Length: 145
Image (cartoon, rainbow, N blue to C red; front, side, top):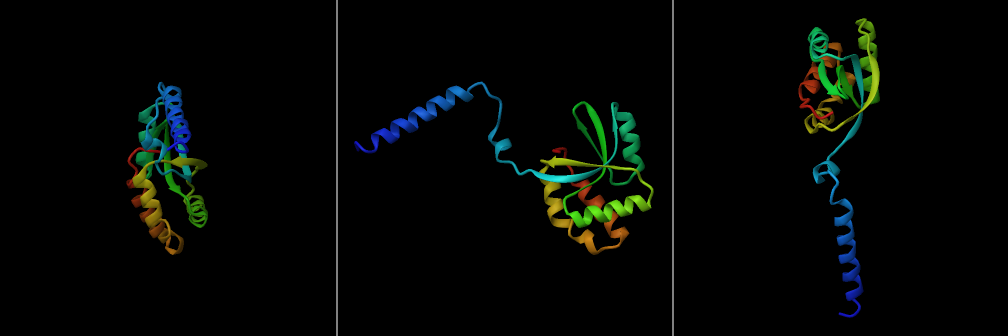
């Protein structure tokens, strides 16, 4: 027991100090252990008002709108696979759709799951498969990017 006592004291002091140190901090364990991935987003536009962003979003079927830092961003696609990103770039260029590639962190678990499940099917498919699967992936977005 004498050999165990210093370890228990150190553990107790560590817990006490960490409680005092982080007492006023605002964080949740869910945020700490949540799954995040880095993805490439095909941004169509950034707007200060929601109405303009909705108009652009509605122009492109499958596009999604996200509010970030007091602005509304409209994305055509969010992808992680380099081969699929290249294919989407080619498709959008052929369709004469202007976009900006932006690296984002995806926190939305439904979107992450959809990317993991469906993105590989976009590599070998035709343009119609590319757009259909893209709509399927973007429709899974629940607001966590």
